[in-house]
Image (cartoon, rainbow, N blue to C red; front, side, top):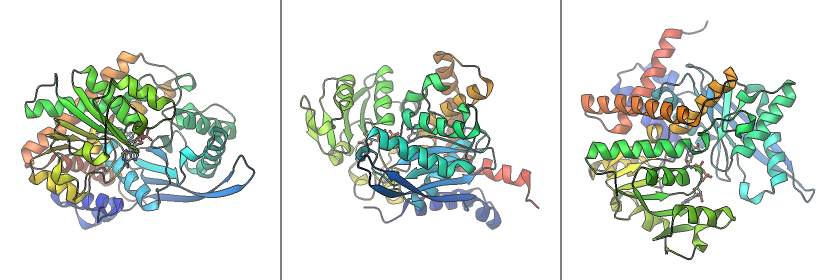
Length: 413
Ligand code: NAD
């Protein structure tokens, strides 16, 4: 267990970046305060006729560099603190990869798996309607996150559009292609994680062909990361989901077919079952945490044998876990860099929606690769210049860009 809440961790990371950048106390006050928080009640009529109440949130942490941007999470454990922390991370991430966005996050404290499709649709539409006054293509643009996918984005886009009186595809990203989604968005976060893995291995002088990878989480990020690292020549030796892990399986596609039936990995019979803890401690070149926060903590970090950890999930490492990995010489590619592929292609989707002009798949992939490579080059240069960790360097770049935008805009009135 971690001793820190996600918000305490996010604030500690910000504090450290502010100190390293020698920013003023008033800039710390500006950067450490979320701009707008909306907490909503989301009533849902279950298929049985019973009405239940859920808590929903939308946090617009920053709008200084552009409209706020961030996912919508449906998970029973989310609360306001975690949502603020994730919205804060989105802010530094968008700035790090130089997107003209602030940062946001939202969600509903609900177990999406407990809902029928009709219930999920009603909940999504009611949540959208509750946060409607503060979202929009020029204000705040939601996207999928844990527990939501392109179906939820289609319902959000429709709810917003019906209220506007015309189609507004740019209000969300991660939509189905026919509604103005972008080619390459579904796999984008996983593709970006694979690009990060490739670059980290190059930095360590480890051969990409045949490098071994373990992935915690087999959802939108974990699955596509597995596909992408294998397409680069690496070998995924183990994956896990909430039910546990498996190694020595047939193929990633076989696992995908298994979970597509609604089953979990614990019922996959053709491999060797392992626990999530065992997965974290496998003898591999690369470990990709791609599930939830705090997976790598003071307990799990000391036994990690991977040479590099590429953070597919948001905030998968506690400060204690981070410190232990630093002392043990494990290279950590931080979340705001490693998983930025999703928001980069979300940005491409928003640009395409604004222009009503859609790109080919190759154009999306090439532009994703070059934007991530630019961010990698920026971070690598600062790591070398200031002798700081990759997380510190990534945070310093993101935070300094937001601080500079604040300074240039000045203070109203
Ligand atoms: P998802 O809901 O599609 O998948 C989550 C996966 O994690 C599932 O396989 C689930 O079974 C597994 N999981 C849940 N709890 C677990 C546990 N305790 N141990 C092991 N596995 C567990 O979610 P996703 O979209 O793949 O997001 C995963 C992470 O990546 C989150 O931290 C999310 O914020 C982050 N992220 C997602 C995107 C995106 O585009 N979807 C972009 C950037 C970052």
